[in-house]
Amino acid sequence: MKKITLYSVMAILCLYATAQSTISKPLYTGDRLPDIAFTQVLNHTDTKATLYGFQQNNQKLLLLDFWNTTCIPCIKSFKKLDSLQQVFKQELQIVLITPEDSNTVKATIERWQKNNNQKLRIPVVTNDTLLQQYIHKQYNPHYAWVAPDNVLIAQTSSSFISAEILKTYLSQMKYDMDRRGYLERNNQLQR
Image (cartoon, rainbow, N blue to C red; front, side, top):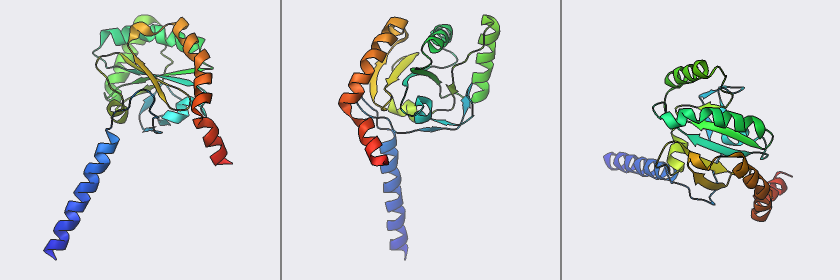
């Protein structure tokens, strides 16, 4: 009986270790992101959201901004990101991603809004652990660009964010998605 219990515990630990290693596998450009559920979202219609939900049925480019409350350049970029979100709102969804807790983030956002006399309209995912594992980050702010078919298409720093670059990405994106064919296959499977 002890042997069976020991083998059972070892099997469970092996399954747990395997599951953990698949969750933390970093993605590279060209890899597809899974639909990740977020339970703590600020500045959104709901406190819960999914990665695919932010894309609104595979219609929008996602720009994931990895930041933290002690990163001054991250916070300074809010104004530019908020402006770009409004200009490209039909084709782009910017989402701020942080591993920090909601209360700390709320205080930082409230301070920013007061100092800038402006409301931040970009959704903010707090307490994130999964995206932090999937995306290679070496600095903050760090941006991950995700096409509407959930393919990681680029990772950049803040200096590469401009209206011109967004226009270029958006014009090229449809062609690239058609070439990959993920959305077409998904639509056929749903029929």
